[in-house]
Image: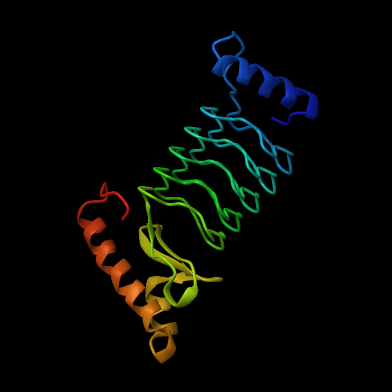
Length: 200
């Protein structure tokens, strides 16, 4: 379902009133088509956006804390500086999504596709389904599982863990990257035994 700008403004207003306990109504945007929507700075805490289509949406500085984004399609969305703490992003498509400086503390990312996502400066503290590998050799590195296989993004490169090992194996000036891959491989082995283990 698509929404006009006016309809979205009304939904956000009712949601704000609901959060304050002043009547209103929780934002229920299940399967909503919000492609290219301007939700810059929107207050959507606890909103239900399950399976919502947010392709190329502007969600810069939006508050999506505790929001349900399970299976949401966020390809090319801009979530720079957004608050996604405690949000359910399991099985969400976050490919090519801008998450620079986003707060993903305790976010649920099991099964999420982070291919090409920009996580520069993002806070992944206690997020599940993803492993923060720090900044080896100055590049932000993150590991996750795609179709049950470990994948990594190091700098601007996204590839399977196996391909990443092959790519960086012969580069002596990238020993920190290889150490990060070693760490992720060890974590991946632990997760294979206990998939509920929280991220480091």
